[in-house]
Amino acid sequence: MRDVLEHAYYIAKKDLKEYYMKPGTISWGVLFPITFAAAFLFRRGEYSVWAAPGLIAMTVLFSATSMAGASIVFERRIGSFERLLLFPTRYISIALGKSFGGFLFGLITSLSTLLVVYVLLHAFPLNPALFTLSLLLAVLQSSSFGVLLAFAIKDPSQTMTVFNIVRFPMIFLSGVIIPINQLPPPLGALSYALPLTYSTELIRYSYTGEYSVIPPAIAFIAMIVQTLAFLTATSMLIRKSIP
Amino acid sequence: MSRATSTPAAEDCICRVEGLTKDYDGFRAVDNISFCVRRGEIFGFLGPNGAGKTTTIRMLCGLTKITKGKVIIDGHDLRKEGRIVKKLIGVVPDISNLYAELSCWDNLIFCGEMYGMPREERVRRAEELLKFFGLRRFRDTKFKNLSKGLKRRLTIAAALMHSPKILFLDEPSIGLDVLGKRKIWGIINELNRRGVTIFLTTHNIYEAFRLCHRIAVINRGKIVAVGTPNELKRMVAAQEIVEVSFSPFTPRVEDILSIEGVVSVKVVDNALRLVVDDVLTALDGIIDYARRKGLTISMLSLRGADAEEVFLSLVGGRNA
Ligand SMILES: Nc1ncnc2c1ncn2[C@@H]1O[C@H](COP(=O)(O)OP(=O)(O)OP(=O)(O)O)[C@@H](O)[C@H]1O
Ligand SMILES: [Mg+2]
Image (cartoon, rainbow over the protein chains, first blue to last red):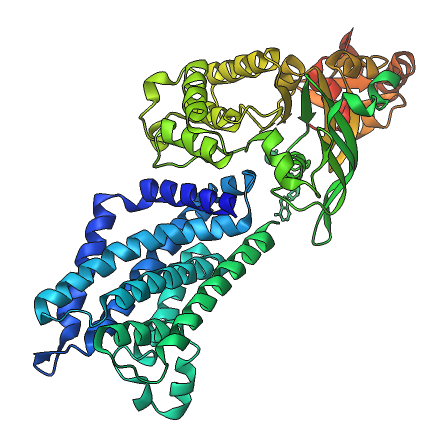
């Protein structure tokens, strides 16, 4: 177990040096949420506090998946991904390490989103401790989801297309813009299948004290289970990817 | 010949392979091969493109699944004790695939970390390797900015971070210029002198004969011969090279191949270079053929086989 975490940490550290700690990447990670937030929060002529948690959850999803995915796709294309398979390490360490890299990047973007929300709305989370916990969990859930998706894609050049096909519907179906209980029944049912639903609900609860349909405890457990499932599925995909 | 193909005692083998086979949906890339790499030697896998060299090396280090067969490295079964085996081996793939955006130093340190080396040891070993490979000046240079030859060197250095007992090199000098090749050969020899067992693949006959203590010749997934360079030469020693030219025209290769005693034929300028396994019969046949076709033999010379010809006759080349 210690080995698994240690290896994951080294892989994440390496990815940070290699991909994330670049001026371009970092400024994208900061600017993207700022512009996004300004446009998104301004609804019907006024800033909406209700929308803030959804915005945060969504930024987390987009930034963490993108970054986790990009590093994997890039490495798979130039053939350096296989180097990781030469080390005496478990596949789960690789899954976890790749997720940690996206995790740190997702954290940076979500903090800058939080800042924008604060500046625009002067709103602060109702329950800061629970908010912090939900945010961390949401980032890990999103980055492990991105890692899984990146490994599931056979043709690396299709990565961003697939990512967007998967992510964009979530904005509408996960309670980010439209509350889940206002969705027509079939779509409402679909929202239970989307990871973003749970992070939005939990973050919203910690931020405003309200949720739409999923009680916080359930959302919390669901996100942990999903994260573990994503990591496990990723290590199975890595094993399967060996020719 | 008998000594070359007899299996050495199991304890001599740092890498023992039995009945190794790889199928890619229906296509057999490696076909039931067995061999032993002895502790301390440089063992070469020589074969033409597509022979199955890379597939074999990838199976030995766990990058490709084994369809059938057994790989024992330093007494550990690769399939059962994969992670133990990975600590014992160093692997240099056929492409230099270190992390492009990391410096030489960070690349080495990362490898040390992944092998669980303590910090001081990582630093000491990385410094030692940079020095040994003449890369100290490039310590902080990003991998992507190195020349091809330097990339190759660093990729080898990275495989040595954890001081493996056996080093697998896939086409170590491919794509390098003469100086680059020489440098890599020097490094391989020096590493071997310092006790590292080396397994390398190559399609370069000169490289194999110059560098390796023993060579396995592989073609179409099968090992067709194993031995020291001298033994391989002797194996075809009964075979000799006959160079012959005819006038007024050069006969068709197929005609000459059908002459008894001729193993292979190659057109060289306006002469034919034949590998023959029975000189007298072949010469008889050649003279007889010339008489029947009304040709005169304008030149005929005889000599022993050199490496390239040994190789061609082993892989059954009638390669024109
Ligand atoms: N992933 C794969 N799927 C299907 N066939 C493969 C795969 N990898 C290799 N092959 C086939 O297996 C055979 C052996 O390939 P391999 O790469 O081992 O040859 P090689 O001796 O290394 O040749 P080269 O000199 O080109 O490197 C080739 O015919 C190749 O096309
Ligand atoms: Mg090859």
